[in-house]
Length: 131
Image (cartoon, rainbow, N blue to C red; front, side, top):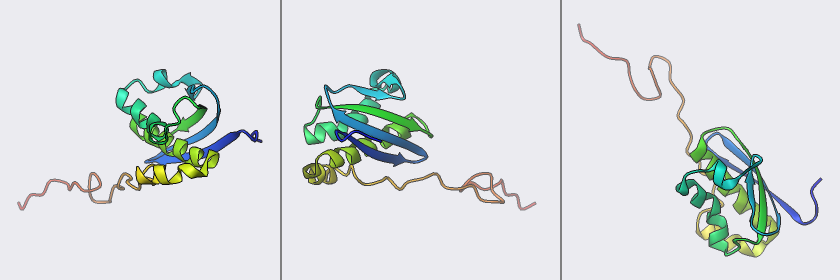
């Protein structure tokens, strides 16, 4: 039930999932009901979130509403970035080459490796003693 002037995008990174809704506006970004500056206090996270807008020179043209869950702050920032890039393509398909060239449409496949039985972690082994 979205308006015709709203565009959706889903972004994922590690275990984080971000549902992004963009609409024409003045550039306000809200994450989980809070302002973007409050939700992402670190500058590196804010830069990651704004990267799709900087790449496509669309800063301040869209209002963004984001619902993000799972993972930690860095994974969430990556998921939001992915979701914004996908939503921008929905809004304007001509932006695709710019976003693709910067690697913003590629889902980062790196995940935490599972713990194996007989070991304390994914790769670490229990201490070994011959005697």
